[in-house]
Image (cartoon, rainbow, N blue to C red; front, side, top):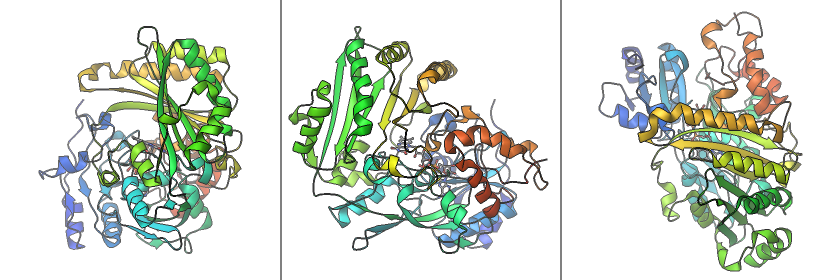
Amino acid sequence: PPAPPPPQAYGISSCLLSNGVSNFSLPSSPSYTPLLDSSIRNLRFELPGVGKPAAVILPASKRDLRRAVLCARSSSLAIRVRSGGHSYEGLSYTTENHVPFVVIDLARLNHVRVDPAAATVWAESGATLGEVYRVVGLSSRNLALSAGSCATLGMGGHVAGGGFGLLSRKHGLAADNVLDAILIDPSGDTLTRDTMDDDVFWAIRGGGGGSWGVVYAWKLRLVPVPDNITVFSVGRTGPAELIAGLMHRWQYVAPSLPDEFYLSTFVPTGSSNGNLSMSFTGQVVGPKHLAMSVLDQTFPELGLAESELSEVSWVESAANFAGVSSVADLTNRQPGVGEYAKRKSDYVQAPISMQGAIEILRYMSTGPQGSIQLDPYGGAMARMGSAATPFPHRAGYLYSIQYAVSWNASDLDRAEEYIGWLRSFYGFMSSYVSKSPRAAYVNYLDLDLGTNDWANATGGTSGSKSVARAASWGERYFFTNFDRLVRAKSKVDPENVFNNAQSIPPLRYDD
Ligand code: FDA
C-alpha cells in the first residue's frame, strides 16, 4: 500500500530557517525526490510504499548539523542520518511504522585533510571512501587507508560498523584505526575522544551507525604501503567438482596466508552448460614475484599465471577494486545503476568439507540471480582482541560469507520469491557456519535477525524488554560486547533519540 504522505513540515522548516540553516528540501520542492533518491543504493527502499521524510536537510557545516539535530528534536521528528546511503536495509532514510522523520544527509560534509607527516587523515563523515582514498593517494604514494572496497560507501556508516577491506588482514578494520572522532550528541553538544565517555568512544568504533549521535568527522591512522602492490582478478569455470575443490582448498589457504595477502572468492548462483564458475580477487602488499612464489606454493590448484598479475600503486588498486576506470573517478558519488537486493551474512570457524562444498554449490545452482562472497580473516584481524572494539569476530573466525540476491525492475513481482530463496539457502547453511550465536556482521545489516519495537516501548521507566529483544540480534553482531554497547547507549543517549530498527536500546527504556 502507498505510504501516508509525509507530515507537514512547517515546524522543522521555520526552526531551520530561524537558525540560519537554509540547505533543506521539503516534499513540495522539485529538488526533494532527486535529493532523497541521490544515494539510495538499494532500490527496494525507493518504492512508493516506503514512507518518505518530512524534510531532507543537507548541513553545510558542523554548526548546521547541530542545529538540524536540535530542530528535528524540537519538531518531534525522528532523525535518520545518512552518509553514503549504502545501508543494506535502508536504515539511513526510512523509519518503521511510518513514524514521521527527517533525513540529515551529510553529503556536503565531505572534506578530507591528510597529514602525511603524521600519517593521519581527518575526514568528514559525508566523504565517500573514494573521496578519501583519492586524497590519501594524492598526498603520498606510500600511505593508505584500511577500509572497504566500494568507492561510494560513506565514511559515516562504514566506519561506524567496522569497515573490512583488502588491507584488513594486515592493518585491521577501518574502525580499528580510528584515533579520534567528533560526535554530535542528542543535546547538540560536540564531543571528542577527550570529552567523550570511554564506553562511548569504544562504541562508535564498530557498534553500528545510528545509535550514538551523529559522527561529524573521523580521524584515522594511515598505514604504510610500498610504491607498488600486486593485484589480480581471475575467473575459473568448470564442472562442480573442480569448483568445489577450489572452494574447499581456498578455506585452508586464504585465512592463513601472510598478512600482506588478501584473497577473496566470489561464486555466482546458477550454472551454464553444466559448468559452474567462481572468481578470485587478490591484493598483495608486495611485488609480483612474492605473490607468485607464495601462491604457487600454497595454492597451486588456482593455477595463477604471472600474466594475470599487475603491479600498481595502492590508490590505483583501490580504483580497480572499486570498479571505476581511473583514480579521478574515485570521487564520483553517483552509485551507478541501483539494484533491488537482499543480503545476509555468516562466519565460518571450521573449514567446510569437500562434500559440503559440493552440496552448497548444488543448492546455489538452482537459485535466482545471486552470489556468495567469502572474505578471508586471520592475520591482524585475528590478533586484535574480541573486546578491543565492538566487532568481535577475531581469532578463530576463518572467513565471512556474504549472501546476495538481486533483481531488476522488470522482476519486482518476484521479489518475495527471491528473498524467500535466499532465506532458505541461509537455513540450509546453518550446519556449516558459526553457532551459539550464529554470527553476523553489522555492516551487512539484516533485519531478518529481528527488529526493535519502539512503538510499544514507551520509555522512561525501568525494565529490560527492549534490551532482551535487541540481544537476539545484538549478540550475533557483537557477542558479549552487546552489554557494553547498551551501557554506552544509556550514557550518551538515555532517551533513545537516535534509534532505528536495529539500534542499541538504552537501559530503562521499556513499558
Ligand atoms: P548509510 O548512510 O546508509 O548509513 C548506514 C548506517 O549508519 C545508518 O544506520 C545510518 O543512520 C548510520 N550513519 C550514517 N552516517 C552516520 C554518521 N555520520 N553518524 C552516525 N551514524 C551514521 N562493508 C565493508 O565492511 N566492506 C566492504 O567492502 C563493503 N562493501 C560494500 C559495497 C556495497 C555496494 C554496499 C551497498 C555495502 C558495502 N559494505 C561494505 C557495507 C557498508 O559498510 C555498510 O552498508 C555501511 O553502513 C554503509 O555506510 P554508508 O554511510 O554508506 O551508509
